[in-house]
Image 1 (cartoon, helix red, strand yellow):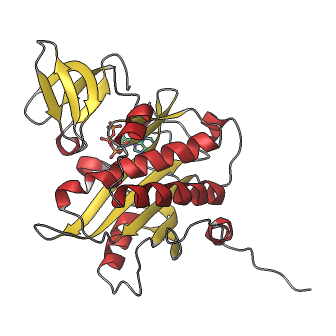
Image 2: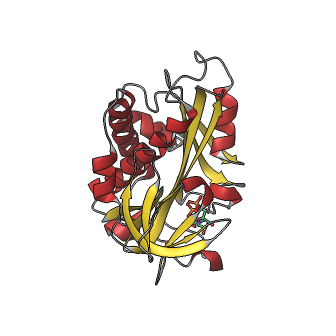
Length: 270
Ligand code: ATP
């Protein structure tokens, strides 16, 4: 009897793809150090070999990274661990933060399309019911005035997450949606949302209104912990450069930039 080999699950992403360029090439790994690290390596290759929209996806990550040298934890098979390689036509490094906003919106809306009440915690976490289900990390390779390529990594908990002490505020998409989802479906939906929003943004569209409408941080009291100081205030709005405008208790408005700070709710994570 012919024993059919099971198809690796990322093949199913391809079957469900409704995009022109996002995820049209997929590099799949069982185990990898970090999808961002591999996507960066691909970024240095010829665009013919690793085109705009190449997706690196893994079942297991051994050195997942977060912002500011933090660790992204995951257990094999439970999460969408993926990085998209982007080759913007003409993008200044200071404007690359737009990619983070696009990605946050795309993950958020993909999760909402499966029934989860997902929102964005500024700048780039996705939360459901006050708990984090997804983190993101933007890496880039740039000259002084031009981004050569960018890599945006996404770690989205789907069926579970590690039960580590540091992850008291974690949850996963299945719990938030109240159903068991197929990783390939979720990734294909994310790619469709991403491509639509990226093309809109790259052609000069303003994504801030949609981002702000989904941003749970706005209007809340937050604690901003930076390298130099920690202060509390009210999160007012997101600025075109991606900074969060916070009104300090004394009334002074301070723009807070994502690279240097952690923002938490005063009472809890949000
Ligand atoms: P935060 O505001 O939550 O500290 P951040 O944007 O500064 O987020 P990230 O880069 O998104 O941090 O991710 C790293 C942090 O996310 C870790 O310090 C840890 O607290 C948390 N984390 C790590 N793995 C997971 C996971 N699988 N699910 C939820 N949270 C996680």
